[in-house]
Every structure is written in C-alpha cells, then in structure tokens.
Image (cartoon, rainbow, N blue to C red):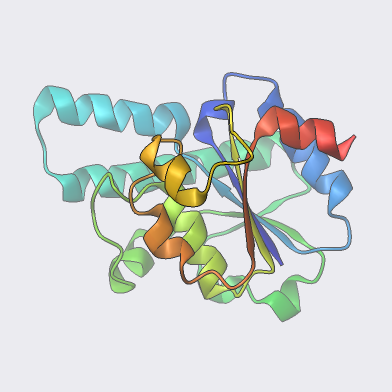
Length: 189
C-alpha cells in the first residue's frame, strides 16, 4: 500500500490532474491512497481565522472539511478513485490494487489525539495515515521546488513540510519521499 499526499497548492496547475492520471497508470498493481491537501479551501479557513479571530479548534475542524472538499473534487476529476472516509474502510487486504482518496473523519482524528493546530496539516495527517496503515511508502507531492539532498528536517525547517511532520513521520515504517509534482511526473514518463 502506498500513501500519496497531493498538495492542495497543485489545484491551480495542470499537474494535479496529471498526477491523478499518472497514479492510476503507474501504480496499477498497488493499493494507492491519496491524501488531499486542503488547497484553496484551507486557505479560506486561514484567512477567515485571521479576519475573525476564532480559535484553532474551529479552524482545525474547518481545515479537515477543506480536505473533504478536495477529496470530492479529486474523485470528480478521477472517477477511477473511490472515497474512503474511515480507517476501517481502508483495509489493505480488501483494497487490493484499488485506488482510494481519503476523506478524513473529524471525530476519528479527535479520538486519535490529533491536535487542533496549524502545526498539523495534511502533510502530517498523511504521515499519520501511512503509519496507521503500515504503508510500504509515503510520497508527498508538492508544488514547491525540492532539493533532493534536503532531509525531512530540512524541508520542515524550510516550511515545505508542516512543523509536526517529522514527529508523525517517525512512526512510518516504509520509505518516505517528498517530491516536486512535476519531477514526479517527469520520472513517471
């Protein structure tokens, strides 16, 4: 099973659709679970919190809803993927070589003790999910330029990954790659 986080910042570019198409082609014999970033929907939550000053708990819940919106959008763009809202529905033995988009459940994340903070974004949630599912690999696709020599700590310090990512990545048993989406697409050709 491979967990792939698609950065929400890919939404305004053609690389988002290209990444989805590439995932369907390139991983035909693997179970793939896409973790959507919040994209423009999460950006609106950030802006609204700055303007109105509501608490991080409300912002966190709204950001999870932003990821759910992106899951619906991704599935509409790539109907070969199914939406999986709950972890029990993501059973590696049942998924086989299926393609899923994770739509995180707010209550499940609360029960798991995921903090309501902007330190934990879809990056950290992808690492958390990869650890929960004992994924063979976690691939984080970003629009930002990625220096292949940078460590996860470097990428976190540079703001490419959220500030909680390394803490969640420690529990991932498989390989972790952080790639620029275009680099990923070029390698897949």
